[in-house]
Length: 143
Image 1 (cartoon, rainbow, N blue to C red):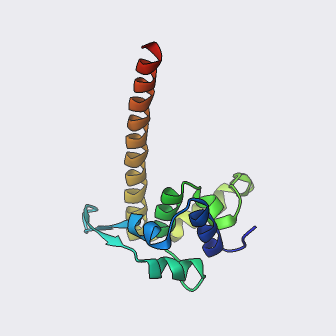
Image 2 (tube, one colour; image 1 turned 30 degrees about the vertical axis):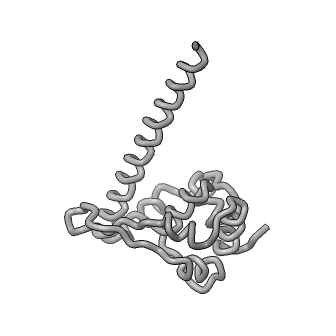
């Protein structure tokens, strides 16, 4: 088992048969204006991915999310090496959860809200695609 985020990224990239530059080309991080609209995308290079894989650079959550999508693995597995079970939250009091929420700045809350909405849109698009594929499969099964 690999002990670091970088090692797990490299392991999955190799398992997927991807070259480092292929992974880098697939990573596009949205950049937002003050109204929360995407204005452009930040692209990554093979060198940036190499730094991450060799633990010389810690990626932002945006990059981890993009890598997780590209490699088709959960963020939990990339970050921890195991799937998240939720036990930590079950054992956390409401007061502790509220306190951790209060630490976030308004800008962080806005950014996280935008990211959550973006993820919701991506999930919806994937559900729509799945529905189309299922429909086509049903059509071919009846032929």
